[in-house]
Amino acid sequence: DVDEKESGKSGGKFDSKDTTHTLCASTTATTTTSTYDPRFTYSSTLPKAVFTKYGAPSGRLLGIAVTILKTVLHKYGTYERYVEGNGGQLLSEDEVRQAAHAYLEESGLENVVHVTFSHNMVAFASFKMLKGVPTLTLRSRGMRERWLRGCLDHEIGTHFLRRVNNHMQPWAKGTRKGGKRRAFRLEDKNPTEEGLAALNTVFRREGHHLWRAALAYYACFTAMNLSFSELFNHLGQFLSDPESRWDYCMRAKRGLSDTRVPGSFSKDQMYLTGAMEILKNRESIDFHALYMGKVSLADSERLKREGVARLEGLRLPTFVEDQEFYRQRLGDILVSNGLSDEMLRAVF
Picture 1: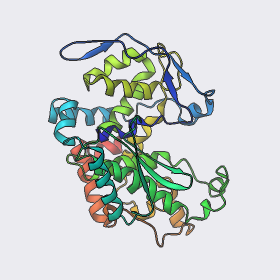
Picture 2: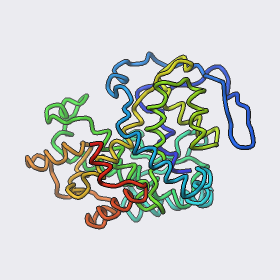
Picture 3: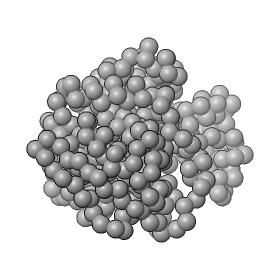
């Protein structure tokens, strides 16, 4: 399902793989349990700075995350029914290609972004510059009819367009290793970047459920006190599918070698953290200015206020052009996930 898109990227600066054997599990009629803790090896030495950058997992939004998960389960009964009922039918590669090209044409990007497919990528979508060409890579299987557009809104309507606009800005000119960003006092963009992308993923989706962001947050926090197999079994209260659970566990435990020990890589918490910060401040945010480039919410407000950012000629996704409609839909997202402004004010 496209809601799993964010889960596929290895994240950070390293890739991990289980070099021993595949998941060893016993299956019952209702769930799958495991006693297997994989051992990960890495193609390069793990940079400690990566873990330092993201810090220890936070439990500040744990109640928010659980509320979102319980809201989906109350409505659909199980996550698997949510996938089938909300995601729609599976699409063929040709159907996905046609839809992707139609999206790019609608966005005026048909001659700008190259679309390619991968048969073995874990992610459902990824966007990269390949030899100077903006390239959207989509997985050949697993895309669902009603979730594909949200995937494109995430990759193209958020990441790519903010990247395009970033090139117009003074902090991008002649940038080498972030030197210009430091000169303009730019903070970490990632919570805003990924939080906005998470919201845009569900913006046009029925129910607007932030399931992926919520469970990723929950898994990162819980993994601090559990081994890989214990986390795998613990997440069975939210979803039965062993492959999906394996994916959440792998992302929460990446960076470790021996996953028998408790520990967690907290990076995936940024999706929910960034999304909730935007929802809390939605009435005051200038969303056009937020698209000025690869900047945080706080920096976008400061750079606009100081007159530093170039705001004319920004490329915007069609669904953000009407800011009042966009804010109203963000309010719908809040309510649809069982949340309220009072709940957000209590944690921020």
